[in-house]
Image (cartoon, rainbow, N blue to C red; front, side, top):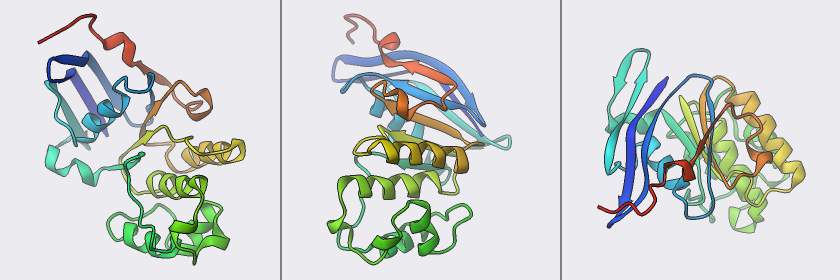
Length: 212
C-alpha cells in the first residue's frame, strides 16, 4: 500500500487549517499526527481516509501498483475515532457480528475470540450501554486494529484508557498492524505513539495569517 499527499491544504471559510503537506507513506510506516485540540489532526485523518476532500492538493492511494479511486478507499481502511458509533442496545457479541459483516478481522473468526483479544470475555453478553468509557474504547480499538485492512487510522486512541489498557493497545497494534500503514492523531501523548517512525507536526503546516 502507498499513500501520497501532494501539497495538501484545508481551509474552513477563509481560514487555512494547514497547507503544503507533501509526503508519501508505504507499507510498515507508522505515522504520528501531532497537535493540540482543534489543530486539524482529525481533519487530516479524514482527508487521508478519503472522507474529506482537501481544499488544495490531492491524495492518491495505490495498492499492488493499482490506483484506488476515492469512492473505493473505504474498502482499504479501518479506523477508531471519537465519532465512530457503536450500538448501545446491542451486546458486545451482537456488535461484533454487525461490524464483521462489513469487514472481517484478522485471525479471529468468533465473537468469543474477539472478546478474548480485547480482554472483555465476561462482558460478551452485555449491552454496550452498560460498558464504561474504557471498555467501549477497547471495543472500538479492537474492531479497527484487528480489521483486515490495508491502512489504519486512530484518533487519540488512549482516550479513556488506564495504564494497563494503554499497554494492551500498544501490544495489539504490534500484533495485528505491524505490516500496515498506521496513522495516529495524538495530543503528543508519547504512550500512544511509541511504535511510530514518522511524525507530522500540524503546527509546521499552519501558514501564519494566511487567508484566501
